[in-house]
Length: 315
Length: 203
Image 1 (cartoon, rainbow over the protein chains, first blue to last red):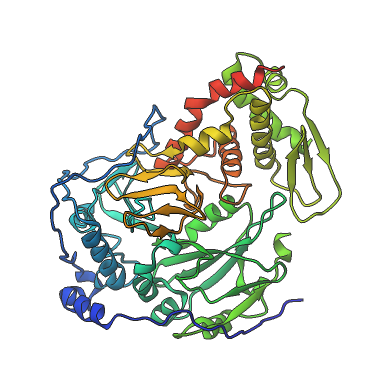
Image 2 (tube, rainbow over the protein chains, first blue to last red; image 1 turned 30 degrees about the vertical axis):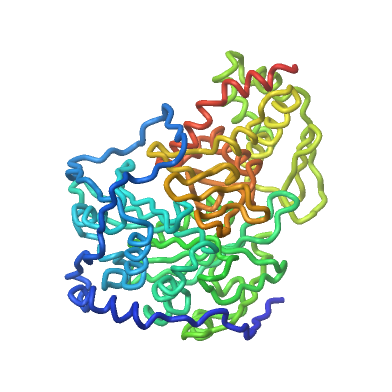
């Protein structure tokens, strides 16, 4: 039996930086208002005398070549080294404003833009855009731990035009300085508020493969066909059956990662299914609520609701 | 029969490093290994322990599942023969992309150059920043989704589960073609011959 449970949970944070909003409004004034005329924002690029820190003893060894190759690659340009503080400030502003555009745009870059435009982000994020098979990527650390917290992948065609982007964000417990910015662009409530009711909401509970695997991992996939993007929230819950999944807050340490698929999100379903050894299923099949209910429950600020998800289909 | 498919795939991958036929490679590497099928439903698919792989009622996706469990058995075989195990190698060395980005391995012992961050010396907190403040971090890097693997049958941030999934993706050709899959493939290429030799040492 499937139940729907709406539970009020005290919101852990309501912080909002008016100063940041004001500053960002000025910074991105030119970029706001038109998705087609987005511009790379000009943020701080203070140079430091030292070189970029690198990891200890990296171990590059012989490896097989990727199946696709980049042709007509753009010219490489040196990237200035930024202090952690300036880099973090730039990144927070990029997260907060998204370059003045909506998904499937990311940080001012739209599918259809030349990859050369993406290179212009390098001085802001303090890292080179790197080729990887048929794509380019930024792999960015968001704090002093210098671990890869954010991957931004740009898939290009033979003419070096961006066809789609994939963004993967992890490490939420460490990234407190970014919570307000994440909330603006990536929280479930703000997403629903900005883009409306999704075309589809899919759910997946990863099977328990071996003993001792607690808690349970889940994947929530929202698809927006009209806009052409999808977002995955993957987290952990302690409950068994039904799982109780509550409002997705970016400050919640049980949230493991967010993935954004900017263009043709349905193409990712098979890959997600395979990785999790289970199948994404429609919301209506695993809960007692429908899409309208989901939108009503989780949209709007300060929502503190939960839904209950039967894991029977994945047993 | 279902389990046999996975075993055959793993045996074929091992044969590339033993110079023997697949079936002989399997016997030499794993020694005496029991596959058990249980009708019990404990809420999970399978487990390895004490030379036996047990599959429970709800087990499915046999080829990859068997390969994952054989990854655990492989580690045990190396350990039993006194070698440095794949779990330990993975935890201590980690896995790095070609451009120097670590995405698997223990946090303990990690130091981010130029930042003052050190890990593994802060009691319950894994990492300490340059001002002595704790930084929340998992003891093992395994946060990135789909980082080089096209499937997983293990969960949790441990070197053991990560290795079993690496082993299974290696045996079944599951590494992705991106920088993470290439790095995981390189990790196996670098170490598999030595591990196979160690695993075979006790036959």
